Amino acid sequence: MNKCTFELSEIKEQHCEAHIQGDWVVANAVPKFADIKAQLQCQQLSLNAEGLAQWDSRFVLFLFQLEAYCQSHHISLDLSGLPESALGLLKQASAFPIRESGQKIAQQTSLLSQLGQSIQNKLAQIMSVLTFVGEICLSFLRLLRGKACFRQRDLWLVMQECGPKALPIVTLISLLVGLILAFVGAMQLKVFGAQIYVANLVGLGMAREMGAMMTAIIMAGRTGAAFASQLGSMQVNEEIDALKTLGISPTDFLVLPRMLALILMLPLLCLYADLVGILGGLLVSVSLLDISALEYIEQTRSALSLNDFATGLIKSSVFGVLVVLSGCYNGMQCGRSSSSVGDAATAAVVSGIVSVVVADALLTVIYQIIDF
Image (tube, rainbow, N blue to C red; front, side, top):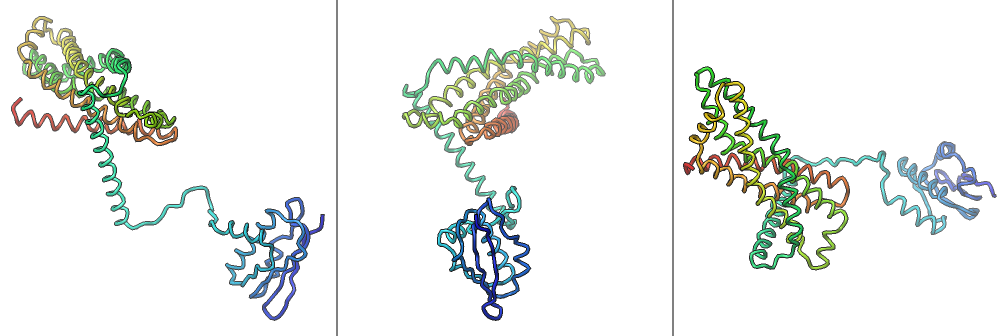
């Protein structure tokens, strides 16, 4: 294997010519670039590769370093004496800038540009949500006409997941909420000797507010995240694209049964949560306030009316729509990576809980205005 050399010769003042000879391959030792830089004391440099034999990427890398050095030191470099294939590789290597690290370089943009980009992203997200809601409305219309394409077996399976399998966690949370309401109320009412009104506090609080909201929050964390994960995994595995290819609407086949199941199950879970919360208040009253179970039940019956339960059931229906919208929308908008599934589940829980709390506040104000 011929030794590779890089010899400089001065043609005229400030103009040098470099003779490249030998085999410039990885297996051969090439001249040190630091020694060559010490010899470059000219303003023009021409390369002569007539003596060049074999060469590979080592030669292209050397040329890349030489070209970068000449540009930084304002030395005119003539590459016309190189093989055309080497010039082509050098051009491709020079087309992309060298990054100092593997991290993305943050682009410096003005505050106004960032604000405009943020507004554009929010508007695009709003349009995406409205489009999704419109698709669901069309799907419901197809359901009313008997043309919606989904399996009834899927509906029953989702109803089982949303209903009976959610009873243990709903029972635990509702019982604890009823216990807390009764205990906090008892500490204050006991001062005035009005312990019996703990039944009013717990009954109205569970029927009108806490039963529906706590059940919806539980379902947002349990079922909403599950919907987002299921649909997100299908998006990653391109199963949703396969449905579209077969001419099946993903909204009909995937979203509609989940929405019907949660809208049907959440009011029933809310009613069950109300009763369990009242039971929790009964336990506190009997054990701490010396109130008999019969007295507590009679006071609760006199304090509550069907309108109180109706307000909570209406809220729970609205909350069911919001929870399933958050879960299914984030699942359908999931990316193509595994990390996107986790992001979709997180976004579904956060947006579901926030929308439930905001809707509860708005509905409470509306009930107050219409005296319901």
